[in-house]
Length: 112
Image 1 (cartoon, rainbow, N blue to C red):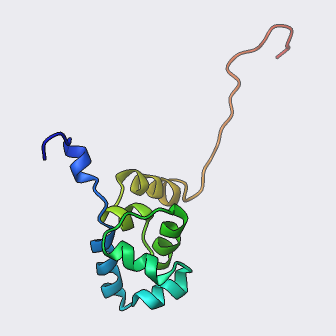
Image 2 (image 1 turned 60 degrees about the vertical axis):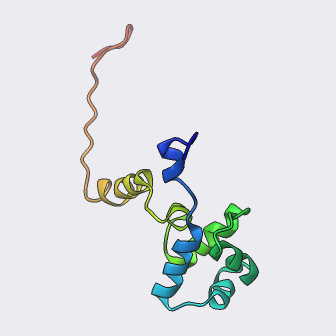
């Protein structure tokens, strides 16, 4: 498309297609998702028609109910930064750590 960068084209909202796949995969209807998330069925229906969401809080509620991130719900793909942050939180800090403190400089007026 003239005037659009590759990043702009790649980051188009695909909530309609993603929502449809998630509903089908989970055997859910808009009505059931509406009841679980607290987001009106009419709003979900608009999103399913790929209309851009206006309320990020509603997007988060629906994403949580579906077990996906907001980014995935909106764009149909995982955000690489979110994946990295998740690995750091879940994997990096697991286990037992040993911390050693070593004084490397003595300040003036301090005795050893």
